Length: 266
Image 1 (cartoon, rainbow, N blue to C red):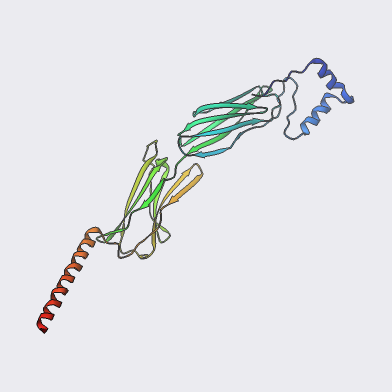
Image 2: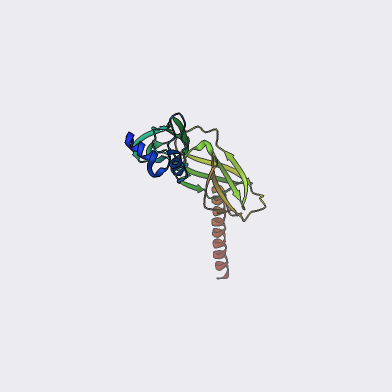
């Protein structure tokens, strides 16, 4: 809250006739000074601005935010903050008030600061956004099951899940994308996405990546996993076991055959 300045009648009288200049002339000088609003006569409103900064804040869920409301009004009558977020400490100085917001968990909230000057109220708005990119993104080793590759991507502690779009990219192009808007969980959550890719893909030796994408009222953020190569050697566990068994059997047969030939030569 700005301090209140009381002017005595003698001071006002001196200001009127000092230097032979009228109050109108001195008021014109004040109006030309940058960042200073003139004091208007009774019954009229003074031009002034109100700022709430920063205008856009993005924080992880559960964080605190500090907003500063300032005004060019020389004698502000009142500062008021309107928000659904939990308020903490308040600090004030000449022409400004600082507000602390606690435990921000709503994904998007508008905060309004109102200032009254010479009977006129003006306001400024800040949008506070809470989001959290995946703490980790893991694309499982690719597995060939029959005629399809199994792509499985794990994401941990994502918020807000309902605004997340997950996609798989193969060779730099999107091969599958899914919006999770049907999820209504209000807390950070783990997400797993699975997709079956036909093994007849033309980009067999191109990398595969998993991507998480947020679009929060124009704020676009994204994250991606480490790439994995899609090759013909990405066999399933059953295929690998069968292959290893076949190789072992072949080695045993070769050893038996070699022993038989050695006995035959003796």
